[in-house]
Structures are given as C-alpha cells and as structure tokens.
Length: 206
Image (cartoon, rainbow, N blue to C red; front, top):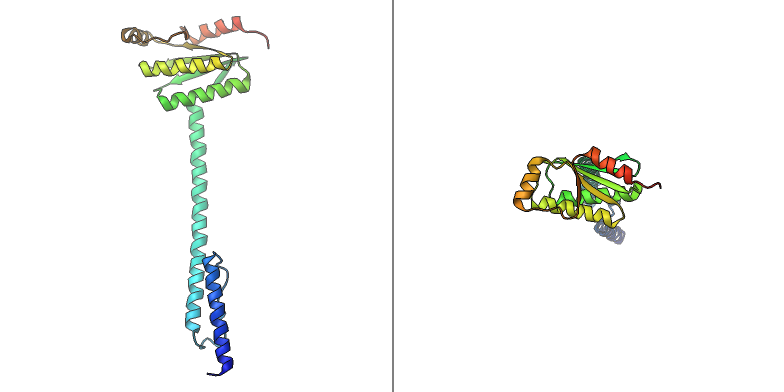
C-alpha cells in the first residue's frame, strides 16, 4: 500500500472517529464520507456507521414526536381536570357582591381544600362581601365534614367577607345533634332564599 493510500486511510479513520465523537454529543447529522467506489478498505464499516447514525436519528425524531404527543395529551388531561374542578365547585354570583357555592356529594379533605381555594379566589376577584355555602345536595354529614365547613367559613371571614351555611336537612340536623356535632359560630339559614334576603338587607353600597 502506498504512502498516499495510507495517508488517505488515516484521514478517513480520523473523520470517522470525529463523526462518532459528535454522535456522542448528540449530533446525528454528520456522516462518514465513503471515498472511492465503495470497495476501498473500511468502506463497509463506514457504511455501517452511517446506517447506525441514520437509525439513531430516525429513532430520536420518533421519540420527539412521541414526547410531543404525550405532552399534548397531558395538557388536555389537565384542561379536563380543571373543567371538572370548576364544574364540581361552581361559584355563582347570585346578587351584586353575594356569591353562592352549591355543594353536592361527598366532601373530603381534598375537595374541601379545593372549595376553599376556589371560593376565596372568587371573593377576592369579585370583591364580594358575602358568601353562601348551600349544602342542600349533601345527604350525610359527619364530624370531619362539619369541620371542613367551619374551616371554610373562618377562611372567608379572614379575608373580610361573611359566610353562612344553608340547606341543612332535618335528617342531617338530627344526626348532628345525636353525634354532638356543632358548627360553632357558623351562621345557618333554612334556605338559600332566606340567606339571600338576610344579606341583601345587610349589604352596604360599594
């Protein structure tokens, strides 16, 4: 083999090593140049390296597309969760400065914290003076549930608004008395209508 051939071979090997080094840094755009007619020494090796790099590039693009798809799906799920949270804790402005939070179903620690956050934010954003928490849709109340509403009312008062509870059914009232459960200083009204009348009479002009 001539000196020129040796030099050309060393240059080709050096180029191949440089391309492989760049692959290690994430550069999959480089390719090893196959000189001559393809029958040169190491031509098959260089062709294999190029095929490997192309396979890595295709796989990386596939992974990126998959990652984008996953992120889009996660974003959609989060939007759906936000919509569900909004639907499960709707805050309605039933009068100027008077908000109502109708509660239906079971109230646990997670939902209680969610209701508190939503109601407090709505009060602050709309500068509401009063909040009515209507529990007509709740069939069972235990000590923990009562504690959730007491804490909710206290949180509302801390930001300068008044909060009352409406819709306690006779069955729940009997159960609370039998269990010795107390709402403390939380004001209650028989119905949403009575609470609204109560607040309208007390309402101060803004």
